Image (cartoon, rainbow, N blue to C red; front, side):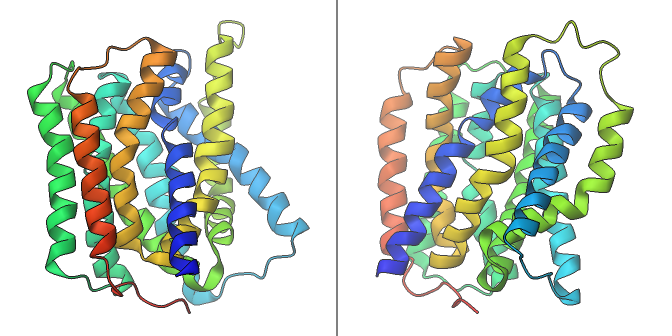
Length: 294
């Protein structure tokens, strides 16, 4: 019971941190090229992760884990940041956060496929209902849209869902902070080179909001958030804890309203209440479907 509570607490802290990612990315892409932003945030986090691994003398992953770590990197270090940054050139942060409502279901499905989890039908009922609540909110409210932006966000959700599930599975024996740290370090040669190749021609035009946003997505979104998130997935199950992501769009919309002055629809509160009910229902019916810690 303590482990289960700890898993959901760690997962919730991760979601709180991730909630600022898309609004911060929306601010950053005003001054930074999306490819540079993706590479630079990962490179900064990769250098910090390298120091973390050396200071704490972490054991190197086994040869059998390298391929999985590279897949994690493809999903959460490159795939989601790049696709979402490109999407945010066409849609608002509030619109992009709607797609995050599909992320828990995608993560749960990959959790079953990659993590060996088995969950009862009632869990899937609540998980699907939560996703439909968020999708319904998007379809019935006048958030500015773009086909290109929407497709890019859909790609971001799919790659991220896989990266979450793969990382959660690895965290059972490597540890949450080790998984994201090694994924970042393995990506560092590529992200460092791309950062240099795509750097802005001049730095004088980069505003302070863009710098602050880059710092946030590098330190919190790319590293600290994953330490809590992967630990939570490993403790209490990938599919179950992933349902906490249903709260992320609403937390992110609040931040977008405060920081970016983007409008908040009146129906958001009612939808948020329904989503919370779905998260609670999914939690109660997650049972013992989570695969045990290695």
